[in-house]
Image (tube, rainbow, N blue to C red; front, side, top):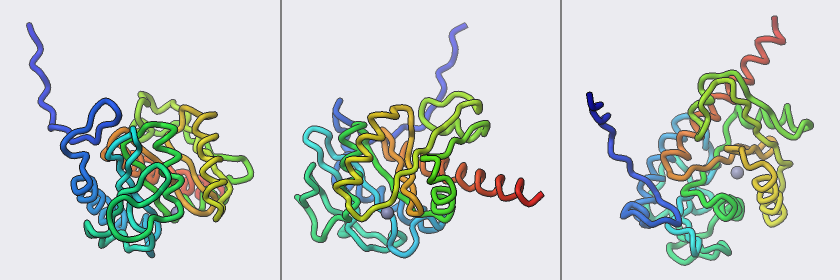
Length: 230
Ligand SMILES: [Zn+2]
């Protein structure tokens, strides 16, 4: 007997080089990033104007919709977004991109992704400080790993590289590009005592990666604290 097709919710995606959807417009992306900001702020991942988000309008040439610098991510409006080109020059909107826009561009350039999300959570700050000397932290054995793109089993070992934090974004962007080139399997990286960067082929995927990695980082810190206390 022929199998019935599984009904799926219609996906809204930000497409890459292969073709843009009607959603991949400045306003469409900005609206969805407003919602991401509200949600992440409520979770405590982007407090005190920290973090930044971007979505790709196109890959060739690179055009990103990105949050302006220094804004409360829990209360963003469409006017708080800029469109930047591959040199981080503003081509639409009023304001200034964060210096960290260079890291978003490095990720989009290296991976051709549709969205990049950056958070400053307590767990990423603590974990990246504790494991900085090892250059990263490995996470394995957890069911939630399967929320990362391409991961099919809890036995997967995810390596989350930790880069030394810096205010020199040109240099840091070069290190990010090298890390992405050398470690093609990673889904994100940490900046030491600073926060998490992750990405996705679409904004929903990038958002899922933040949720999964934030969950896992909290689990790792709590599990190790519990183990050392008993
Ligand atoms: Zn940051």
